[in-house]
Length: 265
Length: 265
Image (cartoon, each protein chain N blue to C red):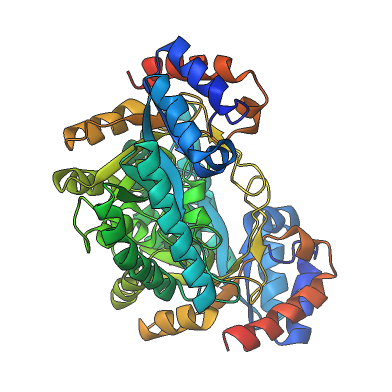
């Protein structure tokens, strides 16, 4: 998504040229290209699929909507398995229209996980709950802190359900470092993502994620925390940024690499 | 600030006509009108000044800037005393330019409070730390949760330092209800403010506060929590909203009253 201007073949070519060993994919471009074809493309390029983004959106009250969400998530788990990644990233979903009940919405997320976790486990896919910044609590994700995500994950085996540590969403939270340590000790850090926090935020607050080093987050410190917690997996950089999308994709990827070295390496 | 289109005399007239018994004031219009004149205007109208907004902005590193901030806050305390309100609302301030150290910035807030709290106490003014939503942590307020604000306040006597409970900033936080109870038990809820959360957020995320009932926050539930915690003070409605500012101010005030009755009364 950081370089969504690139087609999948352009993306894999650029990764190979730049020496990037793995890539996190999003479902929409994968489905448009064909799941099996995408799997072959990435495999033939010698790349790892670090994660698939995203399942989730579990907060509907309407039974038919809930059934559709569960079915779609089973499909996402199958897609992750077909791509050869062990990690499906989940975004919980926001409040249903007209609802003001956050605790009930959060409990519906847990209910959905109890259905999906065994299904994922049987296919070698780990569900990774991504807490999103509290500014998304109403319309996108009722799981707002790493502590909350971890509390949810801990209802299930670690090989089935864990969390995503994304600097953009948790950097402000003084309780997050302890949650990182707790998640790592339990083997529940299933993905680690970097993005920087820059202001002012754009309207809708979706596309303001900063290039590494442009904002206020100490990337090296968060990487150190995650590593100290025992994480040795991929480090993904996930930027939603209109400015980066408007540029040449491979140039952006190269810049991400350079910034990573400068601010987190 | 909800009806900043009104002059101070228009505001007091509208409050009297609508039966609103008190009003929270901001420093800028008060200073423009004259502090003593404003105090007389409100007093002659039979209104209470529920709070003065705002002091704070304590996070500068530069010694001269820090000294200026402390001096300005002493002035704000004097203004609050002159207006006859017992509550000065504080916004901590964001990260200084170039800094990525949130814990250090938060500690500088505590340092400033230790200087100002006795000064305020001697003048019968309580400092009320307002945690702002985490989306403001970088550029406006490094105190992001009610728990954090309360932890800071508890370093000082309750008659000197407490917290602001503002639904807009804390509604998403599952730890906030317990913090409300803890703050109330300690006599540290020094202000209670209502605003609703609506999406999408506008660019800059400053002027998107929703009219009561337009968003996802259960006002009645939060009012119940605050009252159950022993709070019996004023209930302020603080909306920063371009749409409301563009309308007739007294009409907006009347609508606020009606919405308050419908959603919180």
